Length: 123
Image (tube, rainbow, N blue to C red; front, side):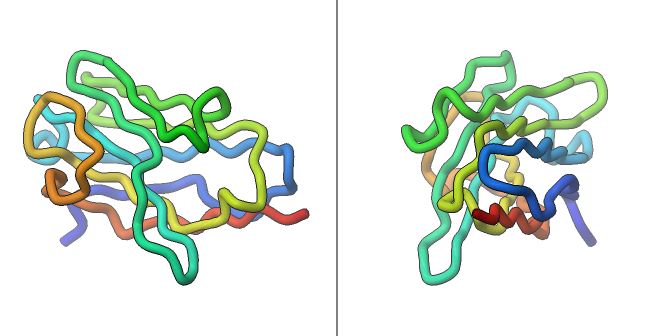
């Protein structure tokens, strides 16, 4: 049973853009911080961006200025807009629901996870 479902991944050229969406449920979304993580081959899963229940945002240094995270609390959805994509952005991207409303980068503080969506940036 999938608790969050990511969509929007695919193959894009360097410098291009992708918009990832995450469809959540009330249980996995309401009153929770939401995070985006990614995992590249041979690397650990890492924090990319997050948004608190009330809309505060946080970004990894590697993506700040290029990515934008947003949420629609009426629709239980989270979006990651990715611009100026680089080869290093190639990874499986995961949406996650946090334990509480406040933002965190700590992976263990996220309780619910999607199946991931592949983003491949070609050069």
